[in-house]
Length: 108
Length: 108
DNA sequence: TTCATTGTTCCATGTTGATGGAACGAAAAG
DNA sequence: CTTTTCGTTCCATCAACATGGAACAATGAA
Image (cartoon, rainbow over all chains, first blue to last red; front, side):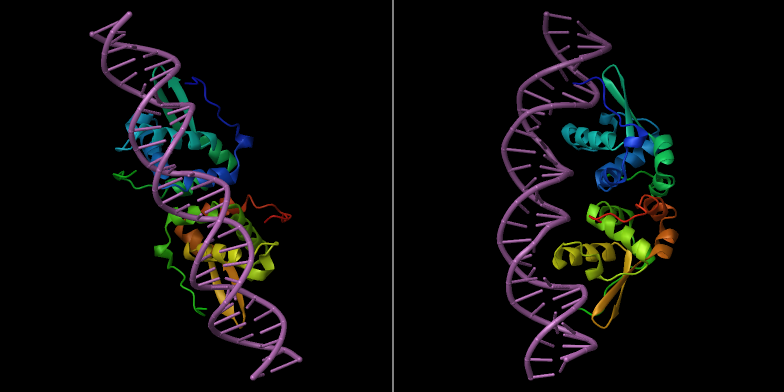
C-alpha cells in the first residue's frame, strides 16, 4: 500500500478525464456523498459493493483531481477538492453538485 | 431514415447521460465546433472519420439533449441547445465551453 | 505476537461502447 | 429515370472499463 497518493496539481487537471470520472453513476454518487458528508473514508461509502470496486473508483476520482485522500493511520479520509476545481473550471462542480439529491439515495 | 428526430424535453434531460455524452473526445470536439460555428451538418464536421461514426456521436448528443437537429432537404443542421441546457443545468455548459480551444484543433 | 480493520493490488471476467465498412433511404440535381 | 449527396441503419470487431474475488500490506488493538 502506498501511503502517499499522487494528487495532480491544479494546472494538470484536464477537462476530459474529469468529465469521464464524473460520468459514472457510482462515482457521481461518491461525489454527492462527499459533498454531503464533507469527508469520508472508503468503507463508509460502501453500499454493499466490494472494496476493490470502490477503491478503483476512488483512484479514478483522485487521479482526475476531484478528490484528495488524507491518510490517518489505517483510514484514508477523502474530501472533494472544491476550491481547486472551482479555480480550474469555474462553475462546473457547482452545477453538478446542485443535482445531488438532498436525501442521499441508496445506490449512491 | 426517420426524417423527424426525437429531442428530449428539458425536464427529461438528466445529468448522467449528459455527462456521459460530453465525456468523449470526439463529441467534445463536436460541441466545441458547433459552439464556434453556430450550426453545422454532419459532413462538415467529419475530420477523416467515417460517417457512421459521426452519425453515432450526433445521435448520442441528440438523445442526451445537447444538440438539436433541423432537417432541411438532404442536410441535417445541428445546433447546441444552449438555452435549454443553461436552464436545466445552469453554468454547466458554460464552464465546459470555456475550455474549448479558440483555434479549433485538427482532431476535433 | 496475534488478530482485526482498512484499503490496495492483482487478476480474470463481462459488459459497454467506439469504430468503421457496407447497404440502404431520402431528397435534389441532371 | 438516373445519379449524386447526405445521413442513417445494420452489423461485426475491438478496446476500454467496471466488477468482484483473493491475496497482500499497513496500522492499531488485544
